[in-house]
Image (cartoon, rainbow, N blue to C red; front, side, top):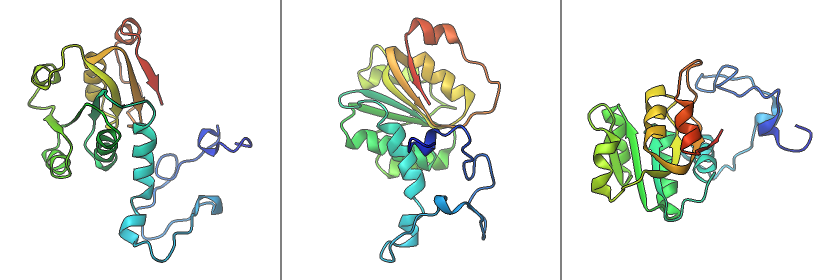
Length: 187
């Protein structure tokens, strides 16, 4: 905390994570959490600063140029992360979800490849994308155990996964796959 890396502080209480969020009509938060927004920035734009910041930070955790990227979770942050990956030069970007409304929005906003994980298996669509070995980078934005397991299953050896989705406690993953694929996980 004192080193200027407040996001890594052991005692951080995240608004909307460890304490009530900001979707209420009123909110009481510490003064250091308040950032003045210039009057010429519309509220609709200011409202996406936090999720966009999270998406950009997570997407840029690893070099994406020329890489095949899997994004699990087509919520606002997942879609923004997928679009960031495309903008910085990822080769293929695939986003998965089970919510048809979110998937339709991802497609409308220009995500390259949109997969309904309740109807299609990633392994089945990979050959059509010219992928023979797996994804190089994963952005786990869903917090859903089945999505995270699918990601691990379809990662290339030596692949890198940035995790932002907040999962329920106690879900299982096959750590042998993480070990033998030599995956790099980053929170």
